Amino acid sequence: MKTLMIVLLTCFCLPALAGKILLIESYHSEFPWDKEYIQGIESQIDASHQFDTFQMNTKRIPQEQFEPMAEKAWSYYQQVKPDIVILGDDNALKYMLPKLYDEPISIIFLGINSNPRWILSKYKGQAQITGILERPLLLKNIKDIADLMSLKQGKVLVLFDSGTTSEIANSFISRKFNAAKTHLNINIDSHNIGTINEWKSTVSDAKNQGYDAIMIGLYHTLIDDNNNNVDANSVLSWTNQHSPLPLFGFWDFSVGKGKTIGGVVLFGESQGAAAGVVARQILKGKPVSSIPIATGKKGKAIYSEHEAARWNLTPPAHWAGTD
Image (cartoon, rainbow, N blue to C red; front, side, top):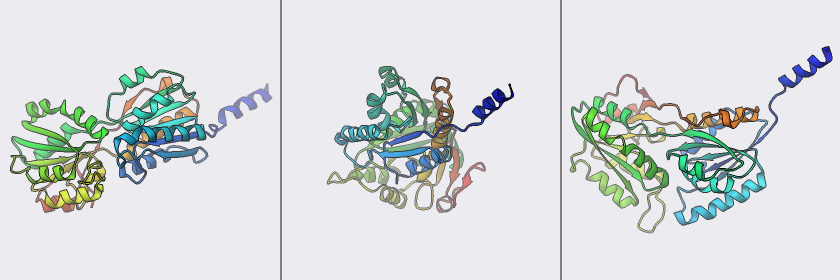
């Protein structure tokens, strides 16, 4: 009996077996969002597990190359043979789930702006799937901006590039416009923009069009006259230098000196950490079916002291300074 008890106790004390995790990024590891959520994932999984990544690079390649890139990701998956695949952001889910859904693996998605219900119902197979949703915080931002700028009524311009995530995010927040008008007396217009010239023209003319502030969404897929991708940092820097109106942001990487003033922003690290917790649970034997799809933690309110001072604005007390 004593021997049996020792064996049982030993079994319960054993750590989870080392597993293989493959992260397929929609974008590239240098992209601030990806860099942050990778840190979040790694903070939650033991170093004994193998962690590989594949970058689809869809913010820097034309759309006609997305499917060939997905084929490369599929080949890499077959080479690695992971136990868990993490799909980072909308393009990875869109292009990889049709290839992975009937594999004997667990799939965790993160950073998904779209409603995944349709694609999950279409592709049902052996793979067990759960994940973390991402939702831009429009109304919280508009309320704080209205308070910060003392707007009894106002007009805010929201700008996105024309990438997949931007189009989905813009579609999501547009459903909140009526609430902003009804409860906050703020009119909102949003645009998906494809070229740097159109972006510059829209920013430069915003004050003449009666707007009080500009909210910057994503700005990473803009192209120039030669159809080349424009460096995202240069886009944000130009916008900061030439905007006739205060700038605010939805994501933390857009806030800081030479960027936007601030906002109630989303953090990649929290999305990654949430996905990492799920991966850890799965590796310890928890069934994926018992881990529901969840929305990531609510954003943090942050601001750049430099940019706030430049516009002579005093952020709400619950906003935290970053520089």
